[in-house]
Image (cartoon, rainbow, N blue to C red):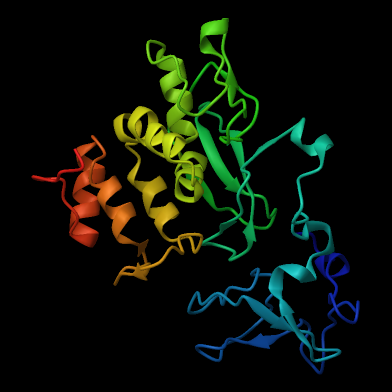
Length: 275
């Protein structure tokens, strides 16, 4: 953030910029948890002493409380309806909004490649450094993260490697399998909301069950409040779950995922008629 960073910030309600007050040479707020005085905009809402994050901030001019991120005009959340077409041409975004565990915004994630060419999901808030690294590389080119019927995910070097639907993947091609694993977060999200039985089961049997092996993706996914079906509960570690989802996850082939699901929720596929 630049030296005159306050010029980039304004209250979303009164449109005034925060200014130093009294004999302090900086703008100051008190931490809700430890009462430490600090500049909330220099630390992006996180107390530098106890690390407590503040989702909301009170304007010192109008004394109205707003979402902390709304004070940054250039980094407001993407509109609810859609992502602009001109942005999609440059970047690949998820179709679903997620809760960022770092800055607490609820927004789309962007899929990027790091310097090691690994595919990484990052928060689109420019002030946030959250990232969810898949640690997977692929030579295939992602076109979108639209895993709904008719959506095209990636493009390979030949017609056999064009993914037109989440379960129609060339499993002979390692790059296709890697691309499928990279897109597992949107796949899980679509699986959660899908109400078409044939699609639901095929997606799980052909894509999720044999290839899902990333526990960090699973942990991130299970802390999203998009999991809201009847019987949903939150366990001691803050993960959401309901019975049908637990039974499906217990059938995943990867031993690490199976152990996590059993350890966290008690679901096991031993002698389970689901197969």
